[in-house]
Amino acid sequence: MKLQLNLTNLMTSAKESIVDWRWWASMGKIVFGCFLVAVAFVVFINPYDLVPGGIYGLAVVLHNIFPSIQVGTFGYMFDVPLILTALLLFGGKLGGRTIFASFVTPGIMNLLDKLAYPNSAAIESLDPSLLLDGAVNLSDHLMLAAIIGGCFSGVGVGIVIRNNAATGGTDITGMLLHKFAKMKFANGVLLSDAIIVLCGLIVIGFGIGLPDGKEGAGLLLSLYSGVCIFVNAKVLGYTIDGASRDKLLYIICDEHSASMRNYILKELNRGGTYIKAKGMYTENDKEMIFLVVSRKEVRTVQQKIKDFDPRAFVVVTDAYDTFGEGFKPFPKEDDMPTE
Image 1: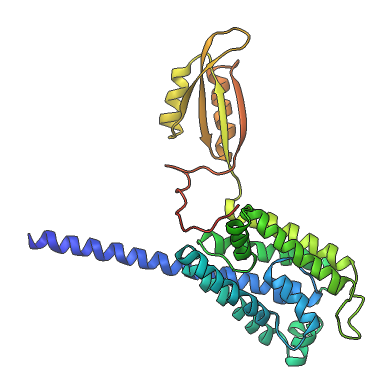
Image 2 (image 1 turned 45 degrees about the vertical axis):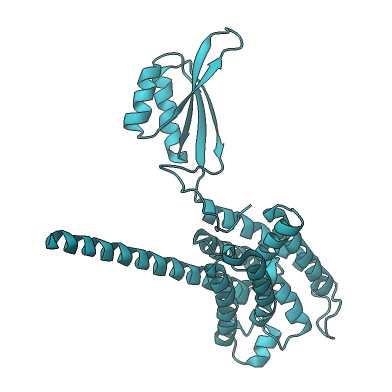
């Protein structure tokens, strides 16, 4: 009896240790994602006045008007009221991880500013020739800066979202618009970002509101900002969904259907579903197989279908999200919305 109790206690402790380890690993990933976002802005976006939407894009715009205030500090100015509002309206659904990430990102950004620039005057000017002693000066390669900045930001935000958090900012405005304006979450974020990019065009592109000597940054900056936004969106989707999405197959196999079933269950180690169907031309009853596989398995499955029934009819399409055994777990009620 004592031995059984000891074993039970050991198993419980082991489970708790695993949970703790997973929690710390997840929080570490969130910090790493926030760090990548901060690097994107400090090294590749802020020095070139790119405005890739989001709260920090707005912070870049305002830093041009008030250069004595760091970009990360502007991030705090907007994130804190947004977080407090969201906490009052959504409560626990906002999630402690999102609050954590929203506070960590601007802090890392301000810290990197102090480490990357030699003095306060350089931080105010965000002169790329002074950034890391000019080692990463991409003033003559703005397209490269936009692409790399978009990549770093997309990967960073993707890592944060994969760990059930968000960096705040327009994610929260998207949630607010979804609640009160009945707007889709993604459309709410898009609207917020569009307004911020427009502000960047007015302030930085046209030079309205800038101090003397800073006008005429150029309309091309808005186009480079668009490139940064596009790259960020693509890399973000890649980071969240993975290198490939699942594939959905509809298979009409008249011959050797039993062999196909055995292959799916035993060799492929997956499940499928028979759907009753009827041929339009022959009016014969058929059984269509509904099957979800990974992208790398598609070619093998196609070859097997050809071996079993060369006259089979197969439709392959993308499965945007697949939940259930063998695929993604179902999202929790308090998970961050992604669309």
